[in-house]
Length: 256
Image (cartoon, one colour):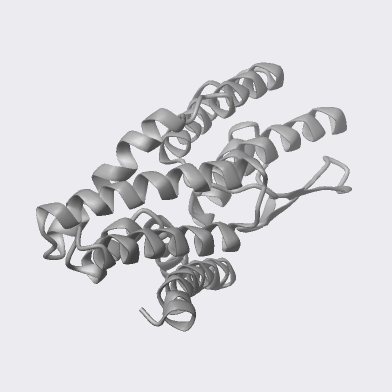
């Protein structure tokens, strides 16, 4: 029986970490793990999750506690993976498959491919172009916002592969968009510096993180909500620093 409970603990922890790594809300992670335990007859589970870690404890029939701690090192926003992982968790609760089968189901979700560089380079310019128009930019401004978005996405792809800290990725992204925009406006190819930069930077705005921290706070997960709130502030700070450097540096050096 203790062996079975340890295997169940491993399955539930794998499911919770998969959801958390993909950007799921804390309440969804804890609820999914609790339902998995209850589906296999374990009703005394204690789960505490924050965006960077999961703590889980269950008791053996003799009352001895079994604990797992799972550190979450790499997190991203992948709503497709959240959806599929959520479906698998519900399926595990309904069917109660063998632990090996449950691990295979979760591994299949984890192995789902993410959008490649080609898809990202196709989507990012569209985001920049249409947001630039939305905020009042001209068609030419939209084209430059699209170019900024493409270059920024290419740069971020390379930095992410080099495992550069996310703060500096956003800082460099903001700086690149600012330098390109300033060059285009200075040479007379574009007019609205602010509209181009805002359109391009919409690719970096952590909208899902902001939404998730609000949902965590409303669900009572205050610690997790504050952590995600601080993350969104760091992203905003990095973007602002990058753009500020790109706009001020040419003025300091060239006086333009």
